[in-house]
Length: 270
Image 1 (tube, rainbow, N blue to C red):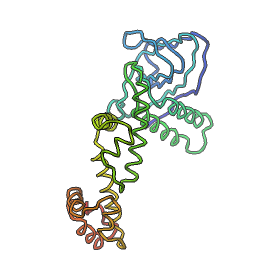
Image 2: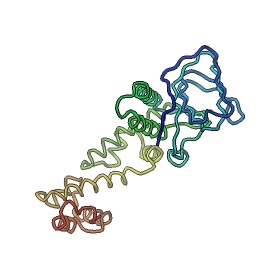
Image 3: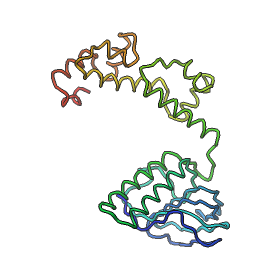
Image 4: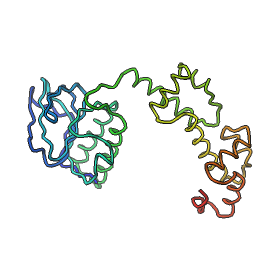
């Protein structure tokens, strides 16, 4: 549960301004640093670059000063969530998230809700904070290491190709096609895919096809062979074998059980 204590979006202080709270602020502080800052973190002086992110725990020393211009967005908040377990975001470490502008937009929306206080603003602030930290936990570089620009651009290309593949899982996604689409060799493609998504394209494609098959089989007007083809299977034996491995029954058995139990009993079949 999040509670907003105070926040400001795109705040500008005087040049060289310093913030010093040796005993912390008594709550969490999330900073989006838009200009370089001198940050004293765990006994060490670090100079942040632009578009850095910094999270302080309630009792941690807050000591940072603008190198020259001072501009940031920030939110002070309280929560009963354990950050290390819930989001895996470290405190008192400079982070460089790939989605900095998205995070900044969330703080703008939070400030708007916090200041104007429309009906249900507390609930909206809680949801915005949850989305903000989900975004942050998905993409950051630790200990001041900049995200490699080339790898970042390549990941975007892979994300587009992955979405195309999974949303068109019935198509023939051969290794040759994937390599051609990405302009990479086989070894390069699989190495990057594993690095970006911690899985293989074959495993993710199979999952997408099996989930689609389960939905198609609930359509009584559709035969099993038709469902198999619409999921990208031309070989019924392969389809049946994979389906049984996933759902512990054959496609025909599943369809028959579904007919008997009805759609409300579908969860008991899995």
